[in-house]
Image 1 (cartoon, one colour):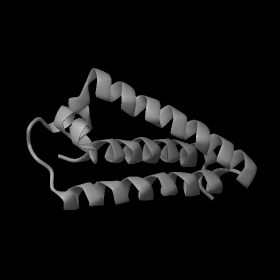
Image 2: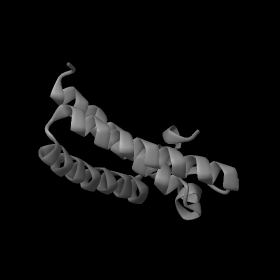
Image 3: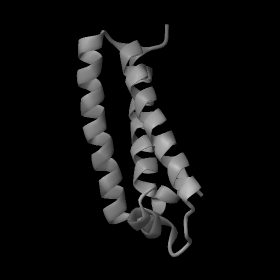
Image 4: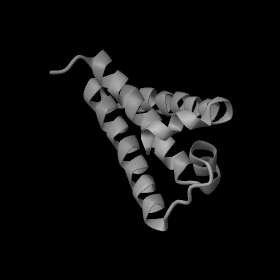
Amino acid sequence: MADPWMLQLLAAVAAVIGFGWLALAMDTHWEQAHGARPQSPQRVRVMRSLGGVALAGSLLLCLQADHASMAVLVWLMLLAAAVLAVAMTLSWRPTWLRFLWP
């Protein structure tokens, strides 16, 4: 069995990436990160889908790391921290989100 700390770290990374993709699926945040380069509706759908899958994967990793009641609590706290990290990145250095979708 994998180390629970490593699973939780991977869950946190997956949550940040998932929220980053969900943010980049919005036109305003896409322009902040990529400039005037337009995005296609297909790319928006793909990023939204990948964001949802990443958040679901984050939950599954938390469930593997701990029992269900504690895993859900940790996952919710990870979601709050991840969305805060993405929001701060968008307000401070939005071009850093280019690494999620070059």
